[in-house]
Length: 79
Image 1 (cartoon, rainbow, N blue to C red):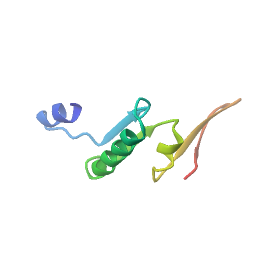
Image 2: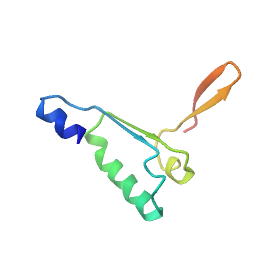
Image 3: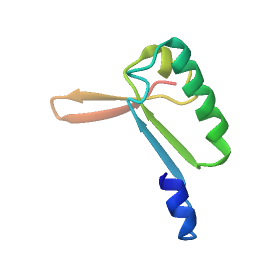
Image 4: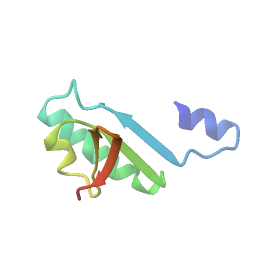
């Protein structure tokens, strides 16, 4: 919907953020979701997937982990 509205204004959406979108999905749904994200790679310059599901994150090409430490949160690249 956001992409449709942006295109009507002549704008382009470069970033897609999906926050825990796979939580309600079963395995087949997660597989379909990841296939759709793969098809979107040419549409967006950045696709950010926030997930706690290892079967989702393990299939993503780049993985970042946010860890809470006493001095503050730290972001680590793990894949």
